Image 1 (tube, one colour):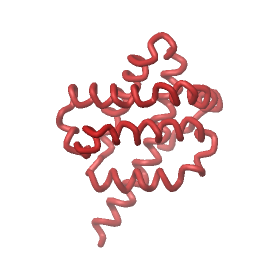
Image 2 (image 1 turned 135 degrees about the vertical axis):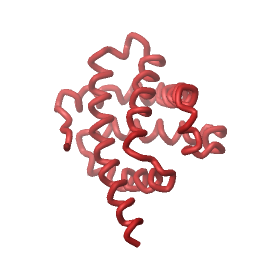
Image 3 (image 1 turned 90 degrees about the vertical axis):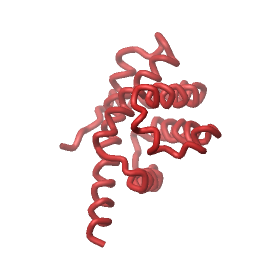
Image 4 (image 1 turned 180 degrees about the vertical axis):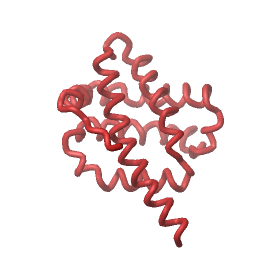
Length: 150
């Protein structure tokens, strides 16, 4: 099933870019904190040195900001999306891991932004997350299949 992203959701996500520029790192730090506490089984999928140095939360904050700024022109993100898919395959990310990240990312947005993170904003980000997740899952599937046939 290929999801679509409505023009309204795109506009809402794009409108959050300024808030992400200011609060993105706090959101990703909170997301990892929540996720590792609730799902310690996924912690080993992440480079712990990059976690401890703060590099991983910074990279993810940058990726989320780039996504928000380019949500209406994803062709600008083809290279980064492919790098992310390759990294996910290297670390054995599977489709069943995406809901864990989604739940913790959306909760972290709410935790950090508080009342500013309205239901409309969270719904738009949920739609945007799953739209991108479907793209990544498809790319990762192709990469996993290529690995198994080589």
